[in-house]
Length: 96
Image (cartoon, rainbow, N blue to C red; front, side, top):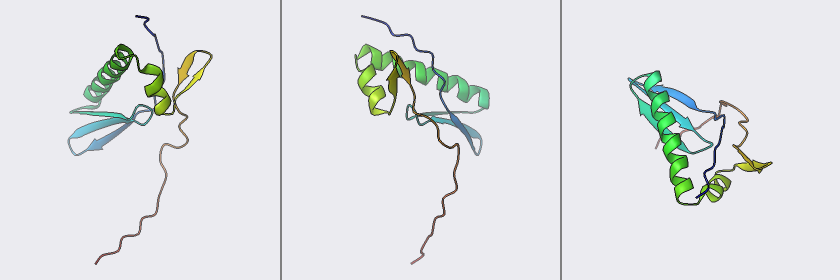
């Protein structure tokens, strides 16, 4: 089996939810949590590694990345471009 080596820069949002930290990357649609910023970074690194190992082992790397919006440029996968880190969206709620 051919092994693929990727070096990628992912945009990862880290949020604080009460006493936990949550990390999420839209480029992989993956998230995890931890008790501290350092722990959530470690957990996120681990799940990204497991994610890529699993899709490589299943032979679905190209299919999965294409479905997530990645593009192949000169034989290297590029994640989707981040357009905005955050935007304000007005929401109207109607109470019954």
